[in-house]
Image (tube, rainbow, N blue to C red; front, side, top):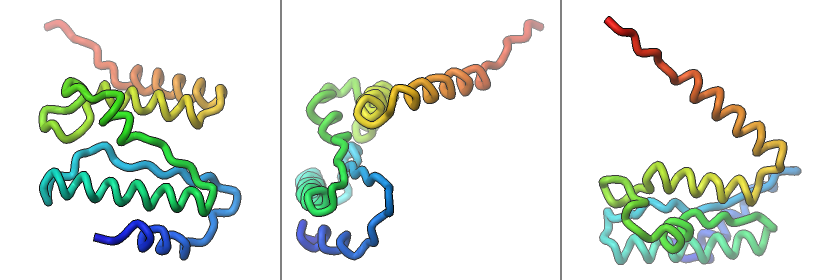
Length: 128
């Protein structure tokens, strides 16, 4: 496992994205392969590293993991495997992301695109 400083230093080697806004987030999916304690520790180390990177570079951090673990801490916001966020949680996170980063015009374009996609998924019921 890398230290927060090692992770942040590795990002220092990445060239600046001219004119681009960099947004970090940490997955809210529970990492359990090495056990719950080590999974939590790994996410905590990553969070400290991302904070350091954001301070150094002016990048942003979007708290998807914290939203699921703190704001949506009820198990109804998890899929059946109890590791992944449910569709309701994903929608909630998306709304929070849109509020934080989308302009009103982008929000409207996204709503229009979603409506168009939903219409394209409609399948008529044909009576036989």
